[in-house]
Figure 1 (cartoon, one colour):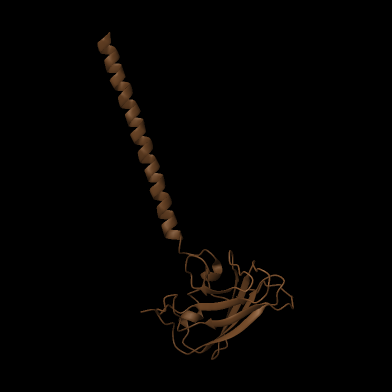
Figure 2: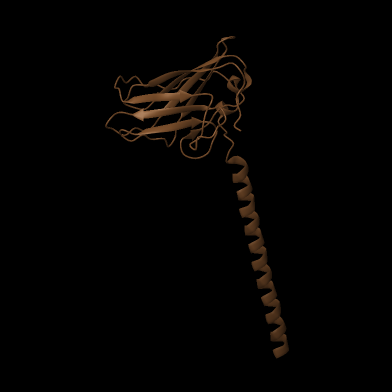
Length: 195
């Protein structure tokens, strides 16, 4: 009788251990699958405007005439990173809030014109999460980078495939303030790559 109880106890214990191992293995597979999915999609934008080149519609509807937002400077070539090292060409803007009110809900629209063929592309972006406190200055990057103040960029468009001189016309909007604009020229030649 005791021998039967002992055998039944061992069988029950083996079943419990088997279930624990099976559950543990299944959980690890789920974690690994999730990590793989995150790793493969983290740096890839699903926004069509970052994939298919075109002249997209400007959705900015701001009609304010109140000053306060300025684009202090802009670059589309000869970019450098925060450490002063050469960076891949991208649209980089320095924005200044000269008002006494914090700003949020930013939008951007920029066109690129090939000055030889007069072909034009245009891209609209909501700058989700970007804010400027009163008196603050920040740099934003359209470079497909991840992290704060980095936004999508179409690397299939003429900015990266064209060889002619180009002109960028950029608009940045935030509610209650006049749209800030800048024109930036890009010299002839392809996109430069960082060293």
